[in-house]
Amino acid sequence: MTAKEVTVKECGRCGHKWSSSIAVPARCPHCGTYHWQGESTEYSCFVCGHTWFSRTSKIPMRCPKCKTRSWQTGPKTFSVKNIDVKDKNVKTVMDHYRRGRGCVEIAMKTGIALSSVINIVKSYSGEGHPPRM
Image (tube, rainbow, N blue to C red; front, side, top):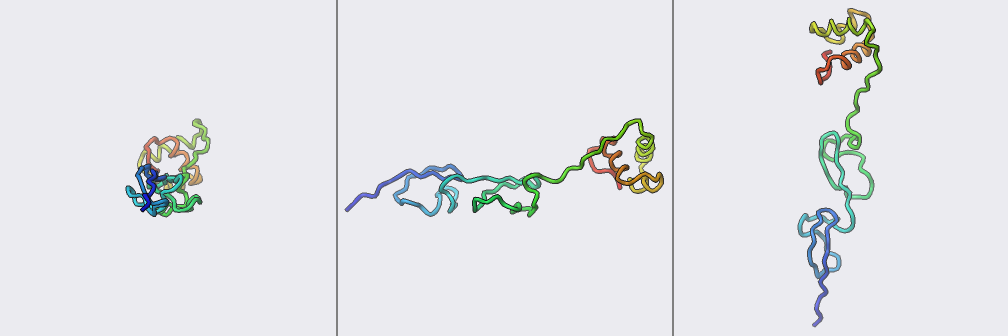
């Protein structure tokens, strides 16, 4: 009768170490993954915050939870164009906005382009949330 050789194995996903008499165990006894051998890459979605391990060595195209393709970069952020504070449009737009008017209404009443109105409001309102439309 021969004695089986016991070796120490380490899971590349959870880091668990265990003694095994099987040369290549099928699963990690701690986390249950079949992909315990070698290094695992953990991915995290910037949109929903979900973290996961990929089954392959390829970079995933989508987040498995929220299904977004922009999981690596997060949602697109709004870039504010440089606006001259001394511009009379800034004063006009912000006066209307502080009186409770929305961006579309301001653009229609003043003749200023809607994109400019939105840029001005986002730059100078300081509310921390999207402007009223």
